[in-house]
Amino acid sequence: MDAGIEQHLAAGRHARAFDLVVPAYKDRVFRLAWSILKDRAAAEDATQETLVRVWKALPGFDGRAALGTWIYAITRNTCLMELRRRRPTVSFDDPDSTEAQHAAASVATGPAADPEHDNLLRLLETLPRNQQEAVRLFYLEDRSYDAVAEQLGMPLGTVKNLLHRARKRLMELARPDEVKAA
Image (tube, rainbow, N blue to C red):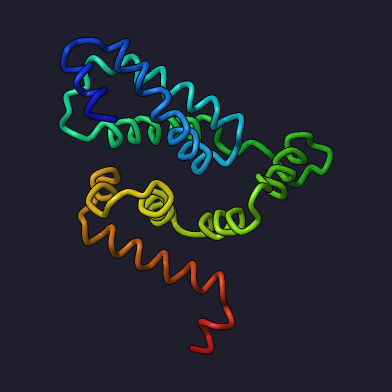
């Protein structure tokens, strides 16, 4: 699919390439934004902002990185800018604060379609950010070790180490009694 998009880009048909990018990447961009921002509305806004940035930057795409890697980087940067912009301003000390009530409800509920998947995502959130990103890319986005290393800008050995540590920690969190007994 990316090859078709890249062919349109090489031929200067940026609008046609973008028409293929949106359905191919919109859901992936949203999932990544959701995993970073932890807020559906913010993730939707970040998805839209990312796609606008992709549209504007498509003419400059040079193919040095894979298209997915490039879009992933734009998404990640968009979300990190959003996180910096909205530094913690909610006070959980004020029980009458509607923002605090909304934030607490959001943390308490979250998506409930698949309890096991939701539990895995909650466990994943306890990991350091670099381990979360590696796990999401490798397991949830089904990327290769090499692709994860490229997307995160890390050596291959570092990615393998992050994944090993993340698996070990997730096992400890998922089955604390079994891990201690072993």
